[in-house]
Amino acid sequence: MKKGYLILLLLLVSAALIFGGGAKPTPKEVIKLKVSHMWPAGSRWETDVLGPALEDMKKATKGAIGYTFYPVGTLNAPADAYDATARGICDVTFITTTFNPGRFPLTDIFGLPLNWPKSALQPIVGKPVFDQFLYKEYPDVKPLAILPTSFFYLYTTKKVRTLEDMKGLKIRSAGGIGTNVIKALGAEAVFMALPDAYLAMQTGVVDGLITGSDAGVSFKLQEVTKWGVIHNLGSIPIGLLMNKNTWAKIPDQYKDAVAKIGWGEGFYHTKMIDDTRKNDIQTMTAGGANAYYLPPEEVARWEAVLKPMLRNWIADLEAKGLPAKAVAAAYKQSCLANGVPWPYD
Image 1 (cartoon, rainbow, N blue to C red):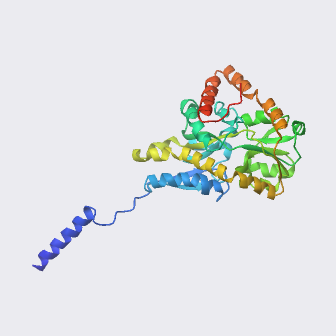
Image 2 (image 1 turned 120 degrees about the vertical axis):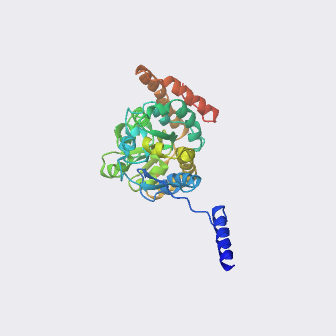
Image 3 (image 1 turned 90 degrees about the vertical axis):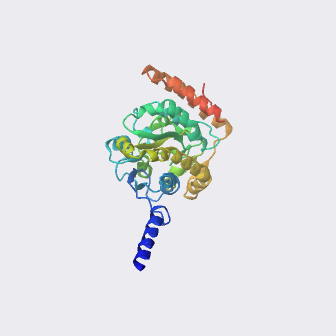
């Protein structure tokens, strides 16, 4: 009799475990993504931008897709981001497209100086242009997102107040339209990756750079900057790329969550910029830089020399058989539809 009760008890326990009476097992992490980026370890780019986007993915996949950061070029130099992703050196990488001059020519339009009401509009405005045109420039990888981002200010070791002060200065450029901005203002553009800018300013290789306030603080440029012109001199195209083989290995039920990493990064990035811009400028000034806001009459002069840039960019790329006019029209339409002024002819 006791034996019968014991058998019955075992059957009931087994049934409870099989049909959900027991604790549900923690899902096994089936894929861990190697995520490469150029930012310092533990910087806000990990904690406030890339990290939250990847954590959203991890949560949506119930832990089935994880990640490990490889910061500051551990796996690849910033300029090698595209090729490193295509070859599988990393699974996902942060890319600044202008670090490869001429390779993503249509994407360069995201570097145009625009009077953004807020950074958070940048991924919203950029996505339709990416979806319609720009994804075609990345055939060897799975592009998760490419978008305009940041407001570029001028940081220098020499005093700049007018256009005349720019003449002859050597200014670090991230490439793309940013190079045209520097040249239009009368300075000499010196192409280099952002992690090299600190030493270049410290040693006088360059007299300054244009970059976002968030990037300036991330790389401690306040330590080598004496003067800052707080006027928007453009943006920079950035994004996330994924290796095609890695993408193919992602189970179908998780692909949507993984695909959202790029635009999630864009959301968290622009939110971070809007939330911290004022403090970043204060950090730069506390570090010894003098922040200067151009008066209206000088703003008009600077913008007048920048205005022909889009027309010249279109003409140059159309001559090479690229649909620059259509891309510019799509970008203009998306800007105006989202309340971003369009200052170009």
